[in-house]
Length: 514
Image (cartoon, rainbow, N blue to C red; front, side, top):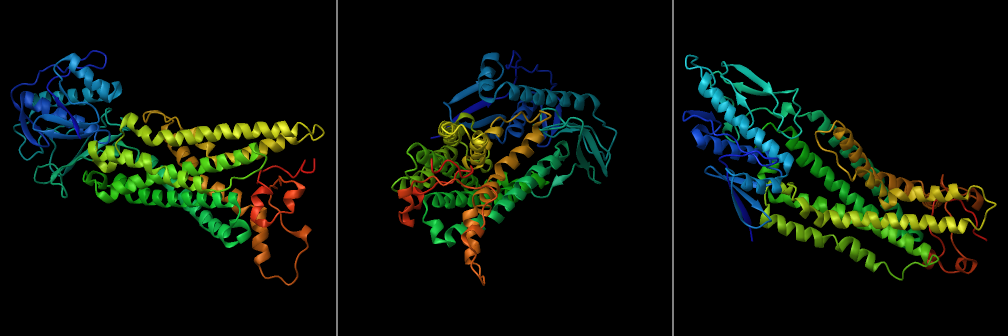
């Protein structure tokens, strides 16, 4: 079922986030990108355009004559913006800041109409006429020239010190986009595209670097039977596979959707086309991310269980597979159904507010649980190490082991949970840092737990052709050694129960015999 809110945009009154625009437009016609409009019809029409243009990535909206039809997941509501109380309902939906942006845009449209009627150059034949294009007011411009104006402050991510551009053709008409046959103004100059491109480059670079290490790591784990039969290695394999899927999907998304949309010179972008392939790709990015979080939780749960239960691994990993690969489909399916019924536009990139927590909630819960597990693991290690007071480096060793588990548990992602406003001076640095933290995890985990793993290196070297076998003491170790948590009777068990013999913790081999 769809729920609709219809806004009849005539007047907006101001009281906190409740606004009203004084009706001062004359009965003369004013030019817009849709042709000449008169009086109050111009006002309502341009204000509708303001809402659609400003919030096209937040709300599904379309125009019905001079009314705005919104598709929400709330009850039906008809609002006439002439009154303060009615517009407060709009503010409760779009928020104070967006209300202010809408008011500024609508007021600019009214001022533009007044300017047109007062200063229309009737004697300047052949000029491109003064017009309102939906964002800005353009004065009459000579043919074969490019008009400029300061970038509007109500455009999200706009830089007011930059200038928008609009081209006047030789025939005295404004430039027409050949794809959609509509007037087009270049507002891309208002955005610092280089910063956004830099964020994409960082994402692509680290995803490629991750794949370069992740794929060989999975091959190494599956190549040697002594490795792949161990439960912890099986968990690593699935975690690495989730990283591979996530990195691959995001490479396609960043290069095929985000970058193309960012560099497109037309409003007829791939996101606005809202193809089925684009929507499915969006949901695939969300699923792969959620599955990745679940496998990080699986790693944390498994390690915590071994520590708490004196290194006794579970009988089977079936529940881990079911939860980590299967559970994400539940929130993804629910979210997709809501989007299809209530916000089926713009490639599903529009933010649905609290409904986004259908997906964010489980992911954040996984991080919080892993945080609890890591703190408890550290507590247990310190408690056991306190029984050996003659070892001065015990605390440092335990802390080192804990720090190395941070990328495995994904706890570094907690550093980018809070997202500053796009208008903040630190926003671009946050974006760059976030791309690094998010997309480098696969690289770091594969490097630490496979490429630099002494056990893996030992198997690789043993498989290489050599003339003389090396003695056991000459076998390579990792740059950071592993502790072997086992008992004497466990050492005599078969290799099929190797996970009961040891668990990889990044601390030095000490206190084993004690």
